[in-house]
Length: 169
Image (cartoon, rainbow, N blue to C red):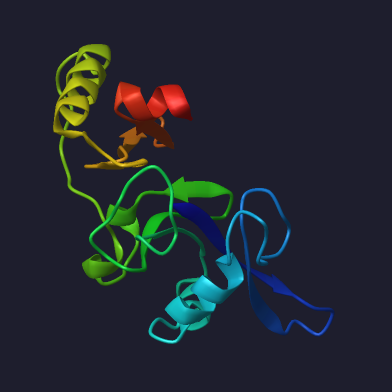
């Protein structure tokens, strides 16, 4: 998918505005890589992200995904958006710590109590085994985002992708 970051800012009169950006540009736009602005505007018809950002007083990172936003994975869904994380007061928060409808968060919760490197390798192998090649795309899961909490209370995000997808990225 494509990362869309929803962020708020204030003008000199303390009026709050919400805007959106992708990883490579300061404001969301259509580009040669895809009609990101058009697709995001379609999402906004059904999801009031601006109010969500203002009410939570958090900036939100979304994944815009589906078969209309083509990447390496062929999805069943046409176009969807899922929350990846929030930023509040300079800190990252995982979806489980964001007070929103869980339908917005594509995550499963699992405590990693074993060796993290071994868990990563086993998860990557499982994802690889589930991946099927189909024409120029793959069927399966592009990967997982892991939210790891350090002893000092800092959340760190890590991607775990099948080695096939990781090699392309």
